[in-house]
Amino acid sequence: MSLALGAFFAGMILSESALSQRAAQESLPLRDAFAVLFFVSVGMLFNPATILADPWPLIATLLLDNLRRHVSSARVKAFAFRAMSPLFDIHRFTVCGREEAGARHALWARNHEGALAMEATAELA
Image (cartoon, rainbow, N blue to C red; front, side):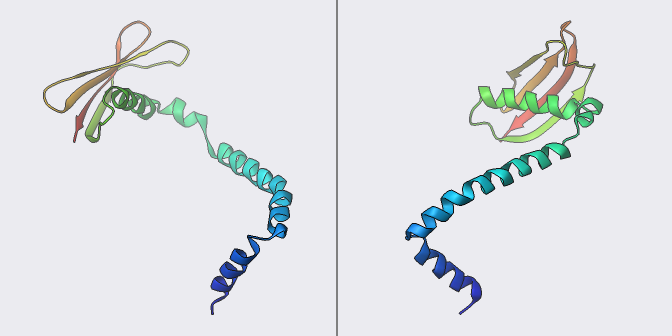
């Protein structure tokens, strides 16, 4: 019998005992500490300068999210976008879309002055 299978059977037998309940309660603080370490380490990997240097994929994701909210069964087959003018997070911007012929949708984002900032097309499957 393999070591892993033996450990599995031992775990199954001990899972019903009072000892397992006590071990679970005593390990909760350790579990929480590892959860904190995980999220802190993931947070340290995030570089906000990436979004500032190239915000267009994020805006494109907002356009797709807008489409998904209005067409809940949407499965995107093709997506293309083009940046037109800058968007700044200190100002409001608008994300819009409309259905065109067939399964094609036009999406766009306008800046706080109403100028076109990004346009995109999505084709649904």
